[in-house]
Amino acid sequence: MTSREKNHLEHLKKELHEKMVERELTRDLGLEVDESDLEARYFDLETQERMFERRQVIQDCIQGDIIFVVDSSGSIKLENWHHVLDFINDIIDRINVSAQGAHVGLVTYGNRAHIIFQLNNFTDPAPMKAAVSATKFLDENTNTSGGIYTATNIMYTKVNGDRDKAPNIMVIITDGVSTYDNTTTIPNALAAKDKGILVVSIGVGTLTSQAELEGMASIGKDGKPIVLQVGTYEALDLVNTKLANVACDKEEPTEVNCTETACKNKCAFGFSPTTDGCPTCQCLPQQKICP
Image (tube, rainbow, N blue to C red; front, side):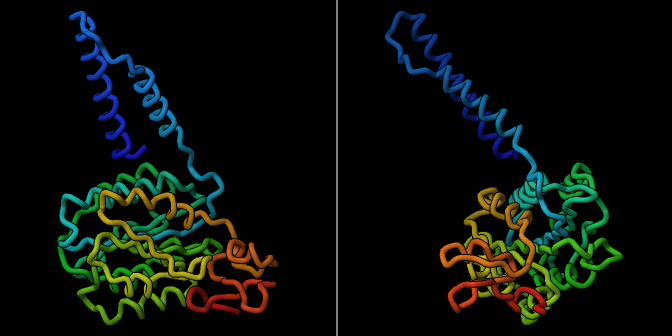
């Protein structure tokens, strides 16, 4: 359970408990009381809490090598930084982080990129999450291109844990537009995609550039850029399941036969339906190196 979910449930339980106490005091005074089933609602919340606690890791998650490229510019503000870190930790909880499962790296960027940990630094989620939680807020400018370049050319290397058979997934989180080296942001993202890296853009707030988010992102199964947008940092948990599903997609990028109606759903990442009646899926050069 995320800290936000837990706090929300605790608040509701406290509110219901206070209503039950108020009802009993009213009854003690011999006055008419509201007989709505407050106890049932209270225990239903406890059941929800137990269900959240039992939420399973996605057991069949692929061996993804996932790198978070995270904006740490001043516009985020310190009070929102913990929402970003909680979001990353929630994703770690949802995927199968292990020696043979998913590996995660983290780089933040302000005036330049800062590598927090490499893909081969952790295979146990507990110390990984501790390292995420300890990540400092930079309060600088927005060198998105530097973060992308660092992840592509330094972190996605064999010496730093990149695995041959594990899909590479880069998750870029930003609340604005590039301000440092902004002319190289899209070219660096294109270079990442040319290396076969699946790029997911997450935009927070209203000051992001849709053109930049889409220009950085890979093309998804629906033929559209993989861009996730939320209004505030507090709302990041609204897209964590979507992102976990992207990270844990099991389909391999190979051609598959598919019917007209099912074609879009059966084309793996890196492929889209062909235009000649949908007999197969075709490779997307924008996203990966095609044979």
